[in-house]
Amino acid sequence: MTSTTSTRPPSALWAPDRRATTTGLLLLITLAAFEAMGLGTALPTIIKDLDGASLYSWPFTAFLAASIIGNVFAGRVSDRVGPVPGIVAGPALFFIGLVVAGTADTMTQLLIGRAFQGLGAGSQIVALYVMVAIVYPERDRPAVFGALSAAWVVPALVGPTVAGVLVQYLHWRWVFLGLAPFVLIGALLLGPTLRALRARERADIPATPRKWLPLAAFAAGVGLPALTWASQHPEWSSLLIAAVGLVLLAPALRQLLPQGTLLARRGLPVTVLLRGMLSGSFFAVESYLPLTLTSVHHYSPATAGIPLTVGALGWSAASMWQGRYPDMPRHLLIQRGFILIAISLAAMVFVAPSWGPSWLSIPLWMLAGCGMGLAMASTSVKVLGMSEPGDRGFNSGALQISDLLLQATCVGIGGVLLNLLGSTTNPTTAVIVLNLLMAGVATMGAFLSTRSTLDGVNARP
Image (cartoon, rainbow, N blue to C red):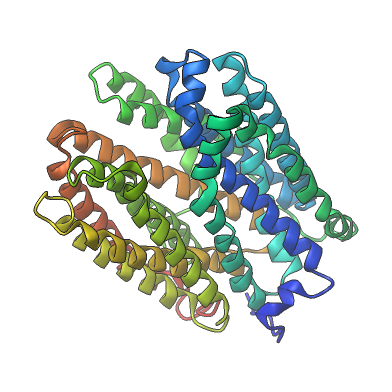
């Protein structure tokens, strides 16, 4: 595909004709981020109030399963009629989910609310990606995705604290209900853009026929949570659940991902795979970093979160930086991001032992965050740049599914290692093995990133 010759600078995101679109886009992403960051803080109290200790992980599982289904259906609708239905339905479903969860008196109602939130978030993100491809010229897209990454910074910094204050001084219900009005405001801000998009003719953009896509979406929506649950409960009885998950997931992925993704085929398929490798390697190590700092180095819960906050700042800064240089080859930014992540994860093995310098986790996680900022935004830009108009929704959904799949898999590997090689009170050996494995994944990603170009075609964003 040819690159756009627009000479608009990144500041064009805030030009008068785009200001409402950019504001609404960032507000919807920020609200979803606040909900995601705040739930972990509020969940222990929620579970206690609703007597749901045996279902502790299911609010996350319900969200994950529903978001996969939302990704796929929003992508399919976007390819057929445009992103407007997904952008309308996504915030609406998310709003309904917030109200249902915020008024829950039982765990069943809470899980229904989380499922609605997952459907909304999954639909919303894919439709917004397609909207970005339509509204913003190609040279502006790095800046757009840099801004989307920055939208996570404030929620990462203050989301858990705000949620804690709401739980302590008001009620956990306000973690959900307090966000609901702002979701409506974000959707209203996108109104002018939606009217303009609806007026565009899409009859000349045929969507690729994909007969089994709906069935594959439901299969993946069951299969991936089954594998996630089994990895979190490594018992003999979980093997059957894991087997069922694999049986459902394996054929579904052949329908949900571009052909050749799992074989790292050059171009679009390997770029989608790289997105999952980024998320999997980074979040697997991050998930067990606070445990290492609290159990091994005796940090308080508050101070154990400092490296994660610093990592979020590094992610945002690097993502914003890459947005200022739209002409830089995306495959090089992806490769450099993987290299930074690989170095950071390998060096984190020195933090795991009790004799290791725990302070080293702060600069190392800043470095890893910078790597994510460079590479994650660049994979989004590159996938949109390599997608034909009738496939943008499908490919954007595949990007999200790859992200969720490998993230859940790699975090699950950490759980298995923790049960086999250590415990929550002595995780050192398990964490060292996990860090080295994930550094290997990132190193492999650095090598595979050279395949994200088509023999020189699409080397630019």
